[in-house]
Each structure stands twice: as C-alpha cells, then as structure tokens.
Image 1 (spheres, helix red, strand yellow):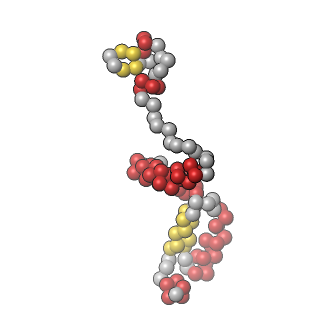
Image 2 (cartoon, rainbow, N blue to C red):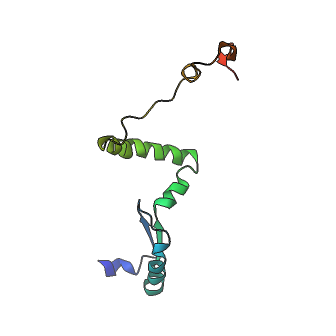
Image 3 (cartoon, rainbow, N blue to C red):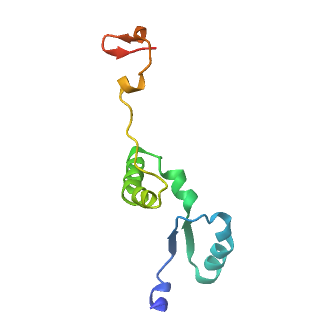
Length: 107
C-alpha cells in the first residue's frame, strides 16, 4: 500500500502535542532529497503560537480544553473545577462607596 500512494504524496503534515522544533530538520531534508516529500511538522509550539490568532481559534481552543483537558486534569487531581468570573459587584467588594455612582463602579 505504501508504494501505491507514495509517488502521489508531495506534502506530509505531522501533528503532535510534543515539541519537535529543529530536531526534525535532518528528517525533513532526507525526505525531500530521497522521496521528494515535504514534511511539515506541527508541534506543540506551532499550536501555541496560533491558538489565539483570532477569536474563532481561541474559542475552539477553549472548547477543546473543556472537552479533553479539563476532565483529564480534574481526574488527575490537578484542577478541581473551572472558576467562574467575578461579577462587577463581587470584584468591587471592599471598594469604598465613593467609587459607586449611578449603578456603576468607577475609579
């Protein structure tokens, strides 16, 4: 099966959550030279650099974390639960009343 498709493949994208960096450089050169195959490794850093590039990616990253990472980390006892954001009133608990005007807190 390898031989049937190898001649048709020109780009191989390899995705991993591990760090690869420059460690793939020799393999990339070898594959290009010997197999005419371009290897595009997308490692941990590739994803980290792009996760917050726009709001869609940021939201997708958050959803992925909620589905996969959060339950795993909770099961390992690393996290207990995701904290919710404070409301304006909760955030200003202890603020002096002089900062409250017309239903809003000011500084």
